[in-house]
Image (cartoon, rainbow, N blue to C red; front, side, top):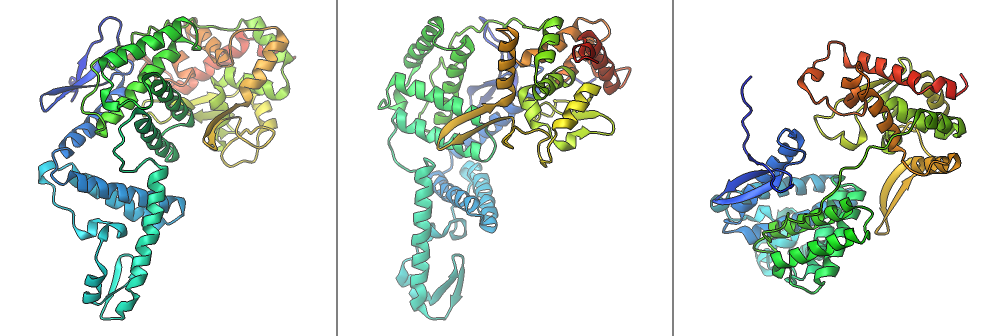
Length: 496
């Protein structure tokens, strides 16, 4: 087999730090997230994509027409937002095409051609009225003209310009796209969150992730000072901020050390964004040196008698959730996201990718065989909704997260009902997801089923041999889950 050739260079981590990808561009070294290691192909693809984008940005910085292009691109971006919000599909397609074309030209650097009149939107045209009158031009639509007609109607054109200027000014202000020169931390944080909100609106960023970025940048802003110049945030300022996070971890002001680490990572993302947007000339050299150690979590599992107790004491609906976790390796989000097209009622199977990583190419499509108890309960509670098999009693998703009036809101019906059940059964620790971990641990400890454990939880097999099963994966997984049903004494617990 030919050796894989990488376009980026792998750099091993030192002093407990994870490894990362490296690329030298124009004599300067740039680093990108390495994920779970050199073999993490999803992380490599993301790093390569980020590297290519960075090369384009660096090339664009050499463009003699750069400022003019950026202003025009921003104008078209505001047009795209307005068109999307108001259902103007034709103008939305046009604006997206223009943005793509202008960005391609911008990345040509010194070879970029000057902007032409056709590149600009109506508010950018700027023809004086007298010149239009001399031409005898009357506008029919913003981009259409009729020559040798009544020039008095030129006022229609000017009115159209004013209407669009008001629309786009409103969009720019709301989205943090204003051209002000205020470089304080507070202003740049607001611009960053506005940019992330646009990604969330385009479904490229989850509500939870947006909420985390808001919390982290708010913590950073409050620590360094909202009126501090973003360009003055240097390595010493970052060292003080990291020390501030470590102290909070030591005082247990965060839920866990992982929270402190995530705050440091999120702030680093914010500063890299500020650098790419040229709000800062350079990044602090210690941006990744937060030194917040996150201990490896002990795997917590339920005992078989505890699972029997939970199944007996549960309401029929909560019992269904437990069965889906034990039988189908599902989390709360998986249960909420289960689509009618993923269930084959005749074959008694569920075929899907796990919700958390379904966007990754490496995530396998797994076919689970349903236990009789799972099938019976699922049929009993299934809805007629086109997108979800199960909904809560109000007809809403079982697990959901969204922004309402600018505030993050999260609902988790499955988790809430399971916590009530645990309290009723006198079980004070462990969570719903530990049901899935219990089954995974049982499979890993079995000599015949250990190799199928990763597939059960919706992950790709790790070893080469496991990737090439002697039996089809579906057959092996069905045998493994049948064994789990017997091992967990499900039939006995439900009085079968």
